[in-house]
Length: 338
Ligand SMILES: O=c1[nH]cnc2c1ncn2[C@H]1C[C@H](O)[C@@H](CO)O1
Ligand SMILES: [Zn+2]
Image (cartoon, rainbow, N blue to C red; front, side, top):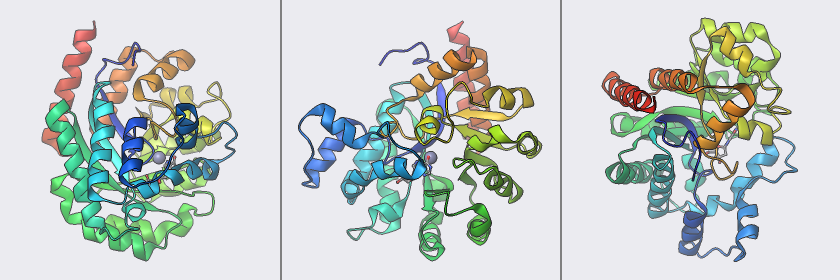
């Protein structure tokens, strides 16, 4: 992998495990699960990357179907988390919050707790080998009845000091607005861990406003902010951060083009911007490529990336000691760039 920004130290707060497995690891997991896949590499890649004719988030989410049966054992989840963290480390991601939905790995009898323990093992292995610091975010899916999600959250919440960073709600936003998830959000907040929330990918700025008004401090994507200066103002007033994922937003048609992105509006308003990939494999990207896009389309410079990474340290779901360590690493790395 090349790229001007490869060696810059980076934090990544929004990265889905099941959307970010390397092609080699997908093949290894498919072999382990005895699942067939195309032997032709182009065909194989097409199967696990979003197609150009995806028209919506719902289309985009269909790309995950092939992965689900591959992540049904502890060993598969451990290898998967290790793989994503390893590839992030190879582009100098120093801290990764890796998210996944346990319910998608419980088809063959694993408990939510077992899935998380396996993911944390994989992150630990990558830490030992590559130094990357990793934590897990457990996702509920918006289209799943909250009783199941609640059960999952309650069963894993005690791993907070073992690497569980917080919770998220992902999945179909269009049919599950925040107004209908209010009870689920409030009950999740009562569990005491921080919450990030996918909002604004469907042109629905109300979901962002509602999430902010419920006290959520990190918004996944937040693309619909482009439509509403008042909502941007609210985001800034609340001190909330956006986890921006450019490539993914184009693919889900959350945004018509990179030229029309609301980056400058957010930047000028003083919003806390952070940059992530969303899904490295499904979106066929990595964080270095995402930084290059910011530079190409918006003129984002190294000093801005430094700022966005400082934002990421600030809003990361970790303790002050780790934040200080990450901040020191960042400072040293960016000084060395000069
Ligand atoms: O960008 C996204 N929006 C909503 N849901 C998403 C996005 N990317 C991935 N997901 C879903 C699909 C995965 O199976 C799930 C857990 O990682 O989260
Ligand atoms: Zn996401």
